[in-house]
Length: 301
Ligand SMILES: Nc1nc2c(ncn2[C@@H]2O[C@H](COP(=O)(O)OP(=O)(O)O)[C@@H](O)[C@H]2O)c(=O)[nH]1
Ligand SMILES: [Mg+2]
Image 1 (spheres, rainbow, N blue to C red):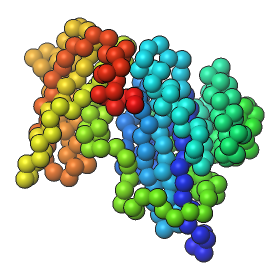
Image 2 (cartoon, protein in one colour; image 1 turned 90 degrees about the vertical axis):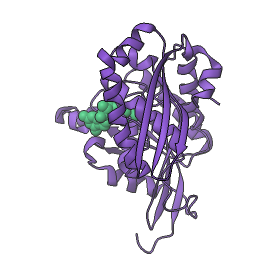
Image 3 (cartoon, rainbow, N blue to C red; image 1 turned 45 degrees about the vertical axis):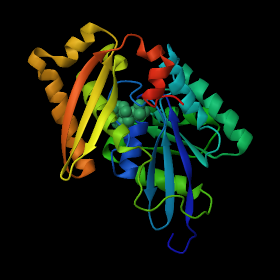
Image 4 (cartoon, rainbow, N blue to C red; image 1 turned 90 degrees about the horizontal axis):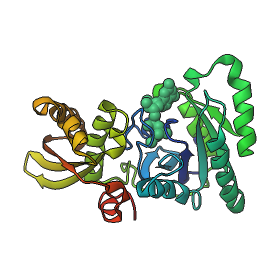
């Protein structure tokens, strides 16, 4: 495509929780801009990741998975996802292609079709997790998802291995308008270093905890001091109950120490220098229902 005009646009990644939207985004952007875990509802707000080449610039908007919300946090998350259905250049519906579509897929497809038809936004289907898809189910699942979306354009991917991701990007680019770049070519996310730091701490906790704990955790950076050769960061981990605080601290503080070490290594990698990371755990009963806390956490406007 060397003699073609430059294309650029905003592309929304929409789908159920846990289908691989953030994994896909990080792979395409080449940096971890959105945290990933095997727990549903890992992504709590919109995250933009930007991929720029000589020929195109795509600003991907990663969104929380659309689900049936049970509290204010859940409602804010679903609002964040639905909000991008308007005003983007392409919508990519990411599905777990190894499963047949269910009730929630039908519901999301209906919403996507509604706004995309209204505004003539192209919709692409990304059937992810093809590594888990049995050969005999391929045609059946492709047909079922395509029918739901009313779109012929699809790609089967394995985001964790990067399989077919380039082909998906090429398909997206073919739908973008000819337009000048919107961001500098070295910009790759809209996330502040503070937010990304809080997210990396939360990711380490999500990966190490189970059941209700991942959902009850939030992380807030309280202090950020830039010294000549290092950054001193202090963050508070919010939980909803004293028992959860106990889990996160662990025997003689061992759990918290592990989390801190893992997060610090990644924070140092993206800041490019040494970090002193100080973590505290605080019980904040009902924070998921508290608009002020949700705002402070940057989960809602
Ligand atoms: N087997 C398999 N697992 C995947 C694939 N893509 C993502 N995952 C895993 O699915 C889980 C959810 O991924 P994530 O990107 O957080 O999903 P999101 O909630 O849609 O953003 C993580 O454990 C990923 O490692 C894939 O192509 N194949
Ligand atoms: Mg996600």
